[in-house]
Length: 148
Ligand SMILES: [Zn+2]
Ligand SMILES: [Zn+2]
Image (tube, rainbow, N blue to C red; front, top):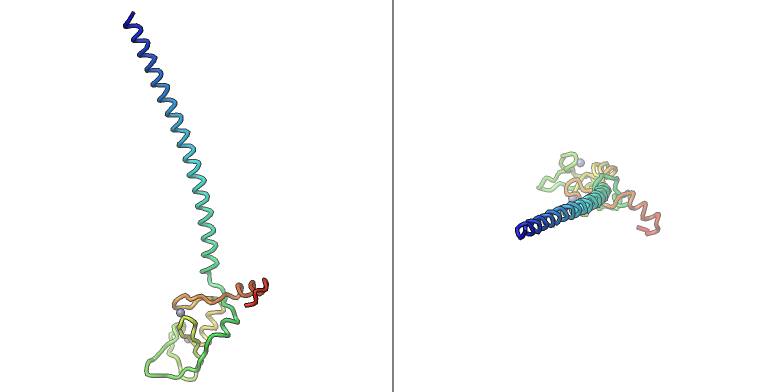
């Protein structure tokens, strides 16, 4: 009798342990599912952030025409050959005496005609990617009455 009772109580314990294990397994599975849902949500947030970054990068780095007003106001000089031979890195020709050379705010120099052509489709220095205001930015600013 004693043995029987022990056995029953043992079985009972075993069931309880088994039940607890099962419950724990369900709980951990649920927690895992919840965690996965959070991961999925985080993933979609990250994807969203990525796409915003892509759009921003696209706006910032996609070649766009430079502001005509800005290009016109760049400092120009008539080139006079010195002992050092400077060259235009767009056409790879040496600057010629009497020709107009443009100096960008970053300090890089180019033939006037070469850089004009370049800035018709780009807004960054061909050498260092120094950014000039873009034509569309200036236009938008004028539209909003910021008066650049
Ligand atoms: Zn050139
Ligand atoms: Zn430059």
